[in-house]
Figure 1 (cartoon, one colour):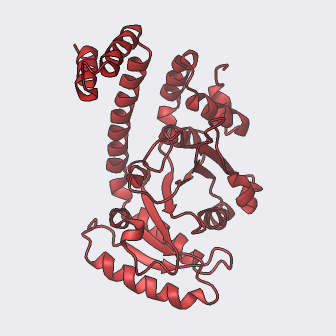
Figure 2 (cartoon, rainbow, N blue to C red; figure 1 turned 180 degrees about the vertical axis):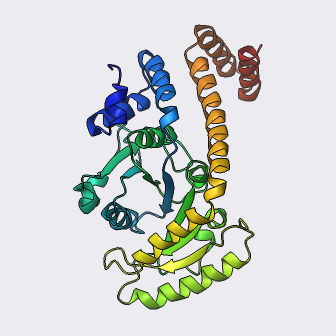
Figure 3 (cartoon, one colour; figure 1 turned 30 degrees about the horizontal axis):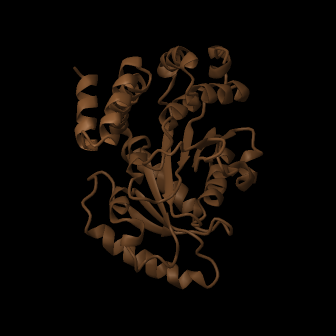
Length: 319
């Protein structure tokens, strides 16, 4: 892939931004030096946004919610970038879902950028290059970044490490099953939104609000912010203004703490990069490839157990 024109990227050119993200996602060895050079160039221009993570079970209405709230942000002059993490196709490795088709209003606006990113099979509900994609969008001038995750799972917690505000969406009838959406995620949430509160679901929604409000009372949170539970209908657009106001209040309350939050995000990114680089060197080393093949033969011949062979391989790597 050809190098990225950094001036075009910083000017907000959408084509260049899309091309830059494609470069960052590339697994080709020939693109590594270009990726690192690009990340170094854009680093001084990143960080000037509010980062919002949105998670919830499949079918809770995340895409419709983002379409509505994103349009509300752009209508008041914000530039919104949406990074949606989709399951990876086992056939071609790309994203399976078409989020632009589910965010029609937002996608048509000139101040919005929507990028589906394949999860690549990674855990944590985020793609391996989501953090880098956020930084590229910030460098391109987007000051509201929304990250939509794959869905709620046991390993979803990495989302919290790359965003400032973590929003958990639930369905009106989920109030009686806290374990069903994982208690740990509730503990991380800065706001819980009961979506699809229209029609006959309104009564169930109020019960869910009461249930989760009580649950939040038992969770020790940041002294500067008290999470709450609200109802909304993305389709009827009820309750959405309140949610936007809560987001604004959150960033006002934590304005002095954001620098510290960003430094912590940088430190965690560093640790992820270390793991990534070690794995890369491991997989591309001819010496280690021979070692793996040799130790695999020991396992197949029952001379060594898988644990013994694995320890032998790792010892060779760090010798």
